[in-house]
View 1: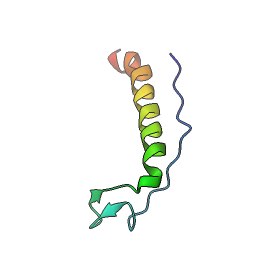
View 2: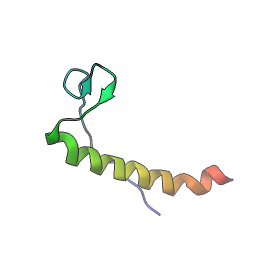
View 3: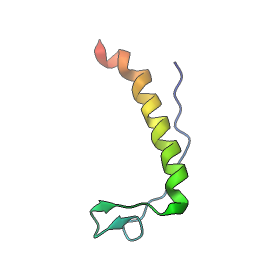
View 4: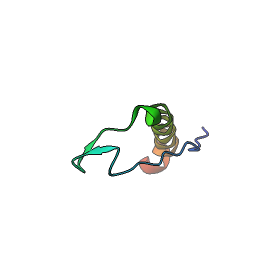
Length: 53
């Protein structure tokens, strides 16, 4: 299984967090953020056999 994380998202404490604690990404970043998280999940699945041993 091959996993790769190429998507990058620049998040800001001022624009993407409400009261510096609640994560609320801007609409323009939402698609890239979803892509990045999907890629991270693929990495987690690819590395699962290594964690099990």
